[in-house]
Length: 524
Image (cartoon, rainbow, N blue to C red; front, side, top):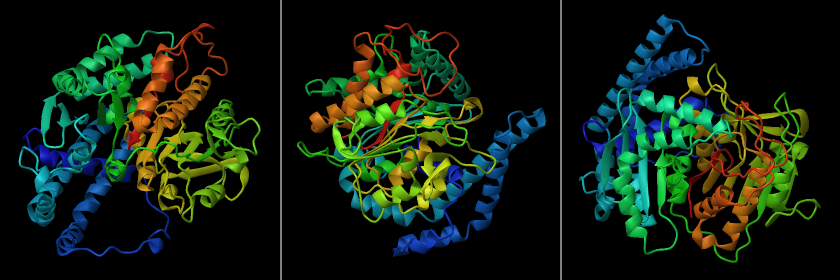
């Protein structure tokens, strides 16, 4: 990035996202390989494979360094010597990765790059580099969409603004350390729902978005003659992954009011340009979740009202959602049921899950989704890890939207870098989900039921406008809607409030209520 080699920077940023996922997901089950058919590789691909086979010793050394670093990062408290060791390990890891990538580009990738360039000459970037996967997607999505990649390095923070044919680098108005500190400050502000979050959100806007303002203003002016708002595709880094870009505040408006703000990962490209839902089509929904306490995790009394507001299952009298489908709560929400409903080529247009997503990492553990049991209902539940999910026959072919209204129970944000925030969405997209609607923090029960029902109704009523616009309008309805009695439980978790709950006639205008919902992947 510093050298201005922006085409290569895009490739490396995608590789880093994939590597971060591998660092989180420890590995598939032993029998997973038996179900895979080997790909037939081209001559260029065989050359690359041979190169990688010769790098095993270097890769093993880097893996060991990464494990040592992870063990130190997982410690609740560290000595000065351990902090120094962490810095040394991080430096060695970065240098080793850069060395391998440099050798790869010099010795193994030329044939592949030549092939990619030959097949995309009409979309060649203005900088002469072959188009990236993001640029190829943007070429299909049209001029009202802009890609923004954020990178927090050791001493500098950058934004890479990408169109179908151009790339522009911007150095942000803050150091990586300042951005991390501000991100955690904003998280605390968002948790205290009786406090005004706009000053802190405005400061973060100045750091991250203000340097790009000319690009955003240009995008808006080009789109002014068309209905709706433009779309920003964000790839975030480090602690910024804990925060919704839609909530950043420019002094007058939230980003929500100006743009559709959508996340993307390397797993998003395959479905990014899929067409919107056809008008008049009736998507079916599989809605599942846990309202009871399993394995010591808190009960979630707001889950059943949420699921009832999403699906209409004729066998469940209280369900009244806008989509017909099947409702599997608590003991019925088992891994065996998932395999029955989503295995063997079966599919639902929408899959909605409301449960605990436990984001513990380090010490050999990995994030998991809590189910109501394995083969059958179990009071202890079933911890479905990302490795097991990745290798499972459960898949999401034909799923236009996977909603993960999941409670993130991890609390110790400040020792972590946000890598786990991408993990569940990336695995779901690997399993062929077109898009994922996820939550960044433990959500309020009453506002979530309202938003989910409103979102699905808007999407089904006007599918041509797309999922992102339906979500934006549902969020705006909370931001600008009339006074409402919040009712129900105050929240599913997140951080403990420092003061009393909001007044009985408070609105849901605070970003705590509307901002945690983020769309990943296809926004149409």
